View: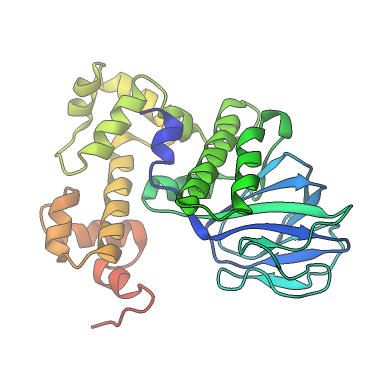
Length: 313
């Protein structure tokens, strides 16, 4: 599996917050859906994306913006325009100044008029530590210019979003996935774009193979020597190349990977800590607890009980 496919394997569109919004200036939307990853493109007109504590970023028609993080930000016709609407996952459109209430299909807000801007946006869920690492590596706003963007996909989404057809949500979600893959592919391919080294490491014939072995069988009692043998290089060569491309030695990466998997299992299952420990490569609950405390600063049981809506005890 190539780098983009592996990184995005567990990122999925969430159609509940997929919308096309038609706006007349002056307009500004405060985006607070809580989504960990949002994709936006202008079908007509331009917009400014104003993330908190970062400089505004302009996007024009056909550009794709990828905005990571679940903290609010503003999308506006001008950075100085004050938001007149807070957009949440539960209430994406409502009657407000500059944004007319939807009178047509449920996924479209606003009435088409000459000169109106048309914003197409969708939110994604994330699952898995590789996706978390990607989100942490993204800039506050990643913009892919129109000439590098999949215009056909955006146009297909725009056509789907105004119709009610069988299987429509699935089509919209997969088209949104496709747009994200194109955007990140462009980011990875641009040597000046600042994509993290570990993303490119997945495409390295040696380090990428080693990463896949660790990802696929984290519970195996790996040593650097075993891992080097598995990818057909010397121990010293693997350690040096892995550290250079990934940013940390193989065993340090494996420890953080195991703890990330354990963290997911603690939140998503009711397995005992001892069972989870063995699933991710630790001999028992005590060994996992020591490693978890060292890397996360908390005990596995405390991490599990910190899940929203879960009672401690």
